[in-house]
Image 1 (spheres, rainbow, N blue to C red):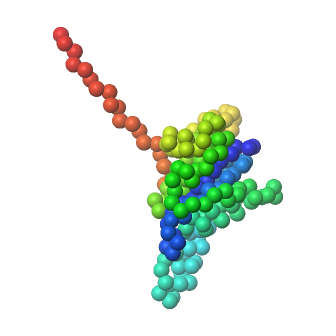
Image 2: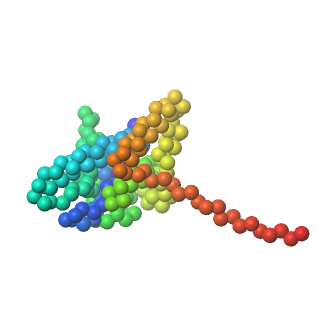
Length: 193
């Protein structure tokens, strides 16, 4: 299914400073199509870094940590199939700003992986015809809401996949951001008797 999404990987890299990469995923951009692939890419990055750290530790090197370029490449690899790439590198910048989200107005989902904070933000949740900055400004959404938007007979399976991917991300040390609840700012007015 052509559920379009973008995935942003952003973070600092020791020698290169801040890096931000934008990936476009034309199909399967809903949470059950992206979150498991994110978890797999992050797991591979952590494994690569662990092996690199072991190799360089013998000569006094520093600990390797995942970086945005590495995760971008690994995620694109996770999306590859017999049908082709599945995801492509669409943009690159230094620091993340809303401008890094691009201008494409037919996106349904946006994922932002912040390596410095070790967070995954999920934005959007449906076609709006507005630029991605609009969904970003609205704030994160609960990826489990996706399961409620599909046919009843598929909801349990999709919910389970999303919960499993979130659990995997937590195990890998990443937090899936949750929408902050607003405090009730209703003021009580005194009533004159």
